[in-house]
Length: 400
Image 1: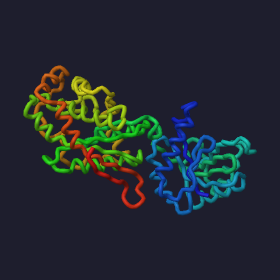
Image 2: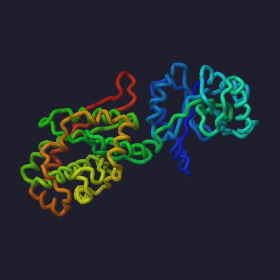
Image 3: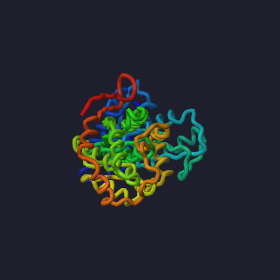
Image 4: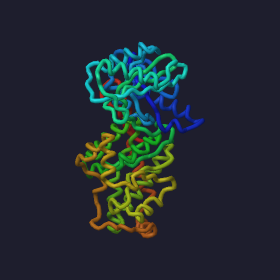
């Protein structure tokens, strides 16, 4: 029988809480594989076994499991009876047609009732493979690792271990509200919190109809991609152009960018409270742009009471870009668009604006009214993965 053996890494350190985390991971795997020919997903002796039906596509199963937070590694395996002859035949069938410069056999005896020890079975299978192929053994840097795991009633034989996302299952870390621009940084910041077990809701600020809808389409595409990691997402689209026009009329140019961002955080916090989120997430990295100095970050964050998480704060652009390429958001982020952050941007923004200075500038604005007006125009869109009919997400629009 064809199966997938899933191993978790960090979850093993959770002590008495481990069963709860593992149950959440099993539930996430079932959700990710929805619509495929999967017979069962169950735990067994410190691992998760996914039993596949005859119609299951390994390529599709592989691609979906590769985006499930909480998985340390996984492998496509043959599930065979727990006896030496069956294990040997599975190994022989698995190497048929292969040519490699070296190999090794690794056995993990999860159920100690199996009569042969791990080293004994490794030596036996290694000798058989050499008899069939004449391949040399390399215990340090083998080109092929043949893995055998002996369980209570069956054995699993696999030939390729794939790396998972790692981290914690989505839903075990609470809910956050992620501010999502069309750039490279903010999707990576959201993904890093998703990987830590948080479910991310998203808020995107746009300047339609002053600018085109392209930034909204990019935001949708980014959320669609990130939904593969958490299966369900909500995107709040906030009209921001009218607020920016009010700021331009009333606020001195050097502090306008900080005022924009303070308004965004206020609006995002209100949406977070409505959604039951416990923190805001931004893609800020210290010193990357003028608005991301320590002084400006402090001035921006001072207007909200909930935590503002900045998972990229110490990263450089090269590191962030590598993560974006890894998770599949980079190609979307680099598409040119008309982002509200570029609208009415002052030529010489303040790099060290104190909260007191910005407070004085904001006294010319009816901040509470601006926030309420923005909230009245919010459109909520819902995404899910997988979608059984066609495409990869479902979107529903409506006013909040």
